[in-house]
Amino acid sequence: MEAAWLSPRVRRVPDDLVISAEELAGVEAFYRSRPELRATPLHHLASLAAELGVGELLLKDESSRFGLNAFKILGVSYAFHRAMASHVAGDSPVVACASAGNHGRAVARAARELGWSVRIYLPAGTAPARVEAIAGEGADVTVTDVGYEASIRQVVLDAEREGWLVISDTSWPGYDEVPRWIMAGYTWMMTEAETRWAVRPDVVIVQGGVGGLVCAGASWFARRYGVERPFFIAAEPAAAPCLLESAKAGEPVVAEEHQTIMACLKCAEISPVIWPVLADAVDAVVAIGDERVEWAMRRLAKPAPGEPAVVSGGSGACSLGALQAIMTHDTFGAVRAAAGLGLTSRVLVVNTEGATDPALYRSVVGG
View 1: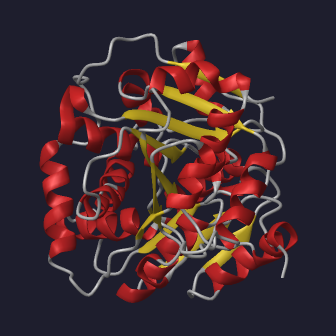
View 2: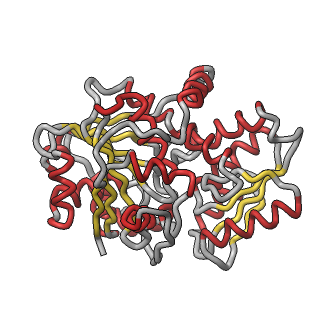
């Protein structure tokens, strides 16, 4: 069921933003030293903004990031850099992770470029196209017979036994350094976007999952703009509302999960390391149904005259679907009012992936 949570806290700059200012500077130095890695577009969608009743709509399109079709490589590339610089990685390690798909492909690509071996564990039910894409990067892929969280536990056990280096985008007790590096890497998309907007957005909506992108975005905006930061909204599937349930409970909890086309956001547990940011720097969480995302996928694929066509997968379209839900449904009226959303609002959403499951994309969009 669709639902929303509004933070009861007075807006301030939290003491613990998880990602340090020094780490953000390191990310900027790393990516500025690699000009061959081209920025992704920031689309200005004027017609869609008018349809939804907002003044300006910006969409950061990650569907072609660094030759892949998802944003995850931003975090993984920086994490590999930090792992080598801090000597966490040996001369030629075997790296491993569990993934719903996009993170695993990013790890496989980064490992391949370094000549490292890689083991990727995927949860039961992973779309064949995602399995093939990761295997095509040279990874040894295992599709487990369990869900995402249990697949993580399995890869951790196997890595401890085999001596593999785990590059995970979620944390657990005793393991949070690499996830912090990965989240720090994600912030580069916000730095890129800032160079393309004339005035900073009033409202930002990003995808949930275990919370890595939420933590990255909320931390970046809080450090950059302080108490003048935009109203920050996390969006996730109503079928797997781990951020919403944790925010409501006031602590990390395990949420029930059900089937959703937002496969890469189907997570029952948040990454524990992100909790301080969720508690203190996120202004609202919305959990939406698949029909919102299906609308967003179709609308981006078939734009109004003068707007670009954008390929957006089930998870990629979540933030735009959330904006449509907030602007049109009474369930989200309190969020709409608190964010001040209306005809003068400037809104930023992120398309986090392209058609990573082509069969699903065709079934929704057609063609």
